Image (tube, rainbow, N blue to C red):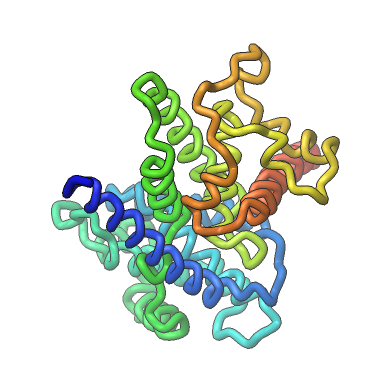
Length: 307
């Protein structure tokens, strides 16, 4: 075994240990005892637009995942029967959303020194009064304190951070052959696209915390690219007809053309990379697919009602 191989093994083990710590953070921030299944889609979409608008002014659109993760933590705690300093309405207000962006930017690894300051952007978008009266600053401190400082990675890992770590571990485990490298890269892009879509459209909750959303998205992305068997990913307690109905939006061209991937990622290998059981992956993939299916249906109903 050469030095590079030893380094790879150490990196693989190190990421596994880090993921165990992240899982504990997930459990603390998204209390699994309160099984809220998903966020309220309409208000969350409105909040996402406001967060994205603020981040765009800072040329930091890449941080939308971090902002939504923090938003979902606050919303899940506001909806929980346990006491919390913010109500659902207060989590949704502009002071909270601006405070979320402040915290995300202050914890970001991106270089933001060349752009406008936080205070300048807040004035430009009409938050000058909230800024001047100290409401945003007070909300920022309250959020930071109530979450014991767990407002950004690594103590609040985003779905993207979870997925990146899993894919690196998976690549070490399966070591794709030269002719399979392109297929593996395509499968990774599918997993990244699926996780990004779920982060924006479904959101995180105690029912689907960041870890579950990312790993469920990874499974769905692999299914879409033909790298993982659809049937292998089906939970035992879920009927084939129900599974097919929630997966209808995740079936890629390979399924229609009958061109399966030669990569053939096994669910057990994926579970090993994810530091969880195959049954966990099956459940999380089903919850993610069902959440996305429901969000699409709710969007269609709202469109029909508006006509």
